[in-house]
Length: 212
Image (cartoon, rainbow, N blue to C red):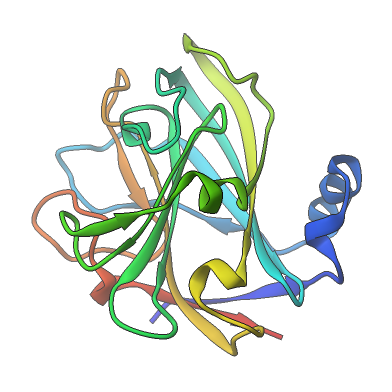
């Protein structure tokens, strides 16, 4: 099983944007989202992430370089997976199912507590507001085709949204990059997926993230 260890940063959820950027710059370990699981979709943009945590939250910074940066979804819980999108799935640490956090390149978020791909409790507006989002791109419709475009996004997720009161020893997770309606549709993962067709809703293939 693929594993990684998040970096402890005291009070990261309260840091202003510039300090949070400096914190992630100081983290040396970066992880690639580079598994091309389906040969029908060979396009592989350059994608990586860094993971950090505090007593209250987990934070992920995604770095992306791709040739088509697209964002149409402006409202939370819309079809962000059709855009230039990064995703973070977490096995439910206190019960069955899993959580999915899907963030397009301009900071629009879809989040839910799921029993399956088609059976979910979508996050409420209040829950969505608890997920801090910082993106390099402005929150507006974007559709730019040019080789080597770079963007980044940070999301800070309180452990309380996962039903946790304290930092867990570990979580079952996977990280993804997709763009269903981009010029070159792609479906990349951090932990490899052994299924015949694209599907990220597959906890059997999650890896683990450890907390120091």
